[in-house]
Image (tube, rainbow, N blue to C red; front, side, top):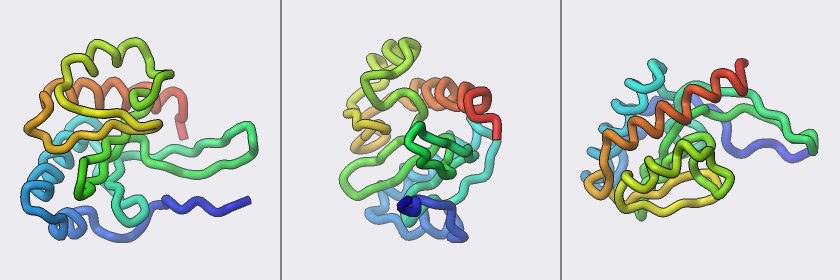
Length: 144
């Protein structure tokens, strides 16, 4: 079975954030870090080369593929920020996310994440609600 590409690393998230370009993305990353720390009560870890993650859980699919991943995270990519919030990124999302997504502001969705160009495009209070809503169930679903 193939080895997971996205694993926790020893890179310090603050060092990674300090190198994010352009400066506006770096500033957004600092805001996201503070928001996710507030929601989770966890210090972040780097997952792979560019995901800043909070908490971790062990998953195992019916196929036998298993691994570790962060419970909540983000990646300050050049084009858009990728926000990894459990159960809100795809069509199988929990119904509780639908009204929050409607109020969030300008965003798009991928299979397992939300994308925002810049934090000024969204309501940070709604994002905080979404992060908390995604965080809590992971503690029950994946108690590791």
